[in-house]
Image (cartoon, rainbow, N blue to C red; front, side, top):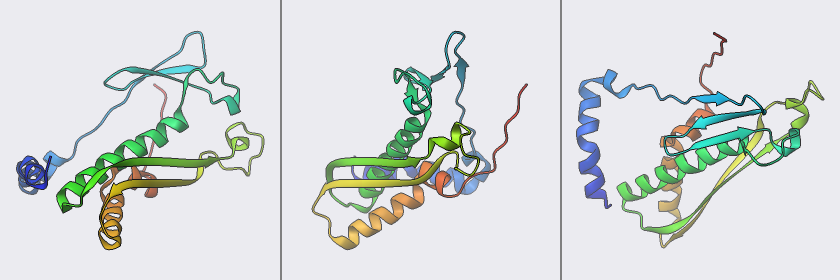
Length: 167
């Protein structure tokens, strides 16, 4: 896809959202089924069912997906797609590359070993290795706009209001 095709694809959506802002607000959903026999949760991804379980550092066998890994995978997926879209729109030639995310966890927090230890990621690093001839200024703009428009990146950076309930 080139920048003209991307603009043509998105133009009617942008026009509609300008005229009808409420049409741009949608609710995404995810659901899972708790394991009856194991400490797992089967999550429907739209393409497959992923069985999530405990990380080996919390007693898991390592046979199920770890939700922390899934969070980083969602970041990589979103950032990768966003970078490709931004590169296409800006006509920055990107032949390929890799996206990696690393996150630091202290499992004392989630296991309740140390009440002062945080539960969740303390630091997350997102890195792009690109096959491109783009110059430093183009790459800086590409990164800045990828950060700005990546839904998962922005959600992690600016935590949303959350609620939880049973029933």
